[in-house]
Length: 194
Image 1 (cartoon, rainbow, N blue to C red):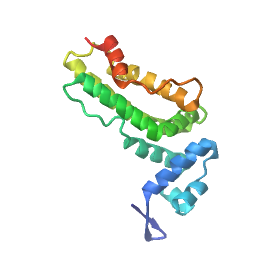
Image 2: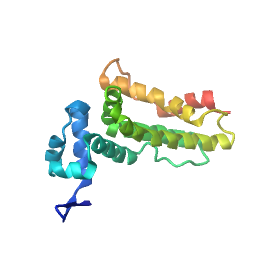
Image 3: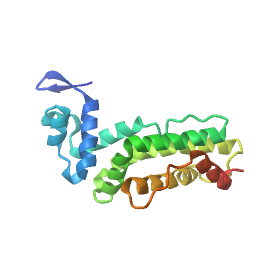
């Protein structure tokens, strides 16, 4: 709960419900169709309260997406001494995150090209990829992964999964089962391991 002052009187709002409502409306309607009025109705708060707390629709959407994605499983995997286990954990956490938040990420990526003001919300995707880069860098330091940009290698690991999931969800191509996580990691290591 967040406490804000309305006319000098403290009022609490449930930020979780505001953020859920915001991401739902954003996914359903895109940026242009998202209104603070609908968000307020779904979150059961006054629309003026949203403006007092966030200032603009863009700031509200950015705060909601940043909060939602910061709690996603992807990017929460700790590094260990087992490179294969770490990468399998990263891939599985990405797949779980995609199941939970893939629609939000796909909507954000599609919308940011039309609405540059959403780039701040797009920055919410970066910390999770940087966490994967840190895992890869830790294994580079131990001589298990060849030299090169750890952030680029993180992208090499995740991009094929993102594309495969996008194709599956959008039904743009026939899908022949789930991704074999262990095989994906072995393929990645065959090109990146020392």
